[in-house]
Image (cartoon, rainbow, N blue to C red; front, side):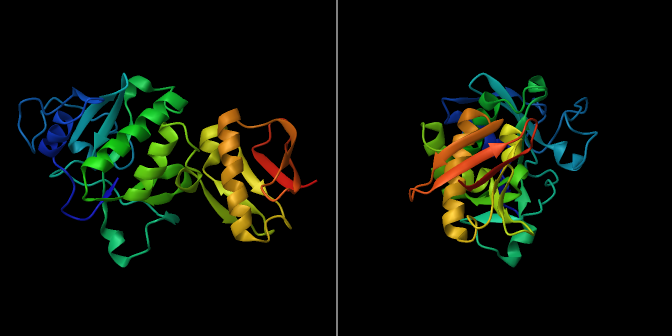
Length: 257
């Protein structure tokens, strides 16, 4: 979650957020009674041995839907590293964005081994949505698997729609890039299903139409969990297509029948 410099919430601001929530609660506060801006001396940060460990100085463990998530990088501790943004959705490029300061939200250590399961990911995105609704200072949400920055309002809209039974937020939680061969290939879909989607030429020539088709197919693939074999489908314009992936393939290819 990306904030302008000096606008990251403090521990006190998070506790105020929690006081207004029904679905979210505090499950662990390593600062204890040390006070805002301080950390208990005996505390060992859950990610302190990994990369970007400095921002572990200020963190809270939050509980949503029975699952725990670590929120780290709170002010006035060190900010987490600014991510490398490759794709933007409702978040225009701006030189000032290089100075954005993130809060890092991730599944807690108790969820190790199941952090990529759909209930855990839905819970984490729901929590990020809750935080974005409360903290108007948040400018965007960064999703690492697709290297995408998603504008706060757009993130709230698409994630809420998905949580309420709508389409998967393909534009944001995945992205699309042109390959050297002129195909249109997803980025980040493999995080969800172990496969990327590749729309082959000449089907990919019209980038707008190919992206719309890609969004529909990403939603379909997330629902069914990927494919092994071939599937005949009909595009929105009535064109007959083949979607196929060989055994163990990490790419689902789409072409005209």
